[in-house]
Length: 363
Image (cartoon, rainbow, N blue to C red; front, side, top):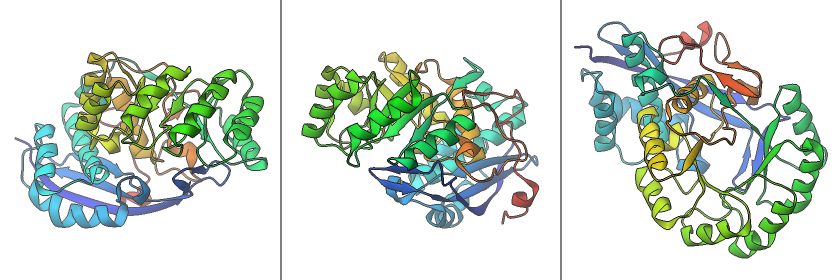
């Protein structure tokens, strides 16, 4: 039986493309101090993962992830069986509270190694694929010339669907300008919990008149009653920050607080659990889409395989942006994406390879 022989890490810090960096209610995301993870099995199979963590989201970053992986997670998992990977996910919960993005980085690497052992794409190991192409969109933010530059950069990269960041003041003016820029293209809004109920009640009907496609996380995460009431104002409500793990999803389902769930590999603590959450949402008639925390190439590949393995995926484009968001790519060969869709490669595991210089950074 294959066992987990070693878990290694490599710190990485990349700057966002200045034209595309996200400015929202939680601040600006101009740099990603993330962590790459490598799992080596007793059979010599290597699997790779990515901790796409930012302190604003879950109180984690590459430094905290490296500490916990080295001192807590790796000692607990070493010499344990590779399969079932879900057992390793459960063991991480027993030895470390919280830190879902950190656990997700290790879990991605474990699932990658498992799928490579089988010689199949990760989406197959996760129960799919139900689809091989995933529609995607890009976030636009800022005002005036900033917004216009972001739109030009996005369209130059091939994007044709968008969401605009709100919840930071001048929201209606920004959305009106975004609608002018994108024309009839798909356009949603994302408040990142930045509105009060009064703000949302006033603004959402105006957004509906602008033919905005959805409003994402209009209220702070725990105001599920408010989210349910806002669903009556004419726009679909997407729950993002309200849903990290399985219990959060159950709360949102019970409260009828959303039309669509924004599912993250990081928030879910790994690919297997993300698919489980998608299955639960589908059983209750809820669509999901894949949200983003600015993942690099490994994290974007994990997003892609999870999206392909979900039994039910929203027609709304997902946020699998990968290298589009950064000034450089961490992959030797980028994901197959033209800005409109991202496609599965059919290769084993995540189907991607890190650049050779980054492979030398693991310790």
